[in-house]
Amino acid sequence: MSKLSLDRILQSQGYGTRKYCRSLIEDGEVTIDGVVHDNFKAAIETDGLVFRLFDEDVVYREHVYIALFKPQNYECSRKPSHHPGVLTLLPEEFTWREVQPVGRLDHDTTGMLLMSDDGAFIHAQSSPKRHVPKIYQATTAAPVTEALIAELLAGVKLHDEPAPLAAQTCIQRGDHQLEIVLEQGKYHQVKRMLAAAGNHCSALHRSAIGGLTLASLGIEEGDWCYLTPEQLALLAPA
Image (cartoon, rainbow, N blue to C red; front, side, top):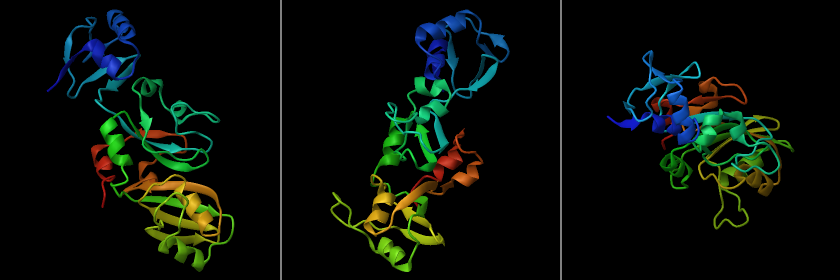
């Protein structure tokens, strides 16, 4: 059981500064169970809390864990330089909550991107020691060959990497299509591995992280959803 003052609750959910949140409360904009609460100092139980603001019901969340179906030409950065940032695809409250991407996808890569405001979660998911498989669908410029697959499975040497990196699995899905499963999550890894093996990645899509698949989330490109505890559990190492 945990109680917070009402202004702190609104601020924690991304509705702006404490001063602005207090003004919303004093103006009678917040209701709980149909009752207007206009005292910003009131201590409110957060467990299971649902309050109404701006004619919408808001479920209190200590932290948010979301999955975004990232489109092309969006940068996974809070300070993008050449393309819009992925945060522009999310409600403004998430910016106030300092939601961040878990790892990165290149601006031209599509697919599943995890995001959260939970620093411990971001650190754990980003750790190279975690060994959570990530599934990619790669389109190659040159046709896929058995030799290419064999080389990716055996491991290729990349610049600045002390040891060769190998795909966990690599399956041909078409003349120019590969499904590649990686655990390491190195910078531009799929693209660099294909280049090192003598091919070129012309398009890349991340379809799954751990046991969580983008298809199971039922979201369209550019959309996002909250992740349930059951879905978060699928992100654990096998």
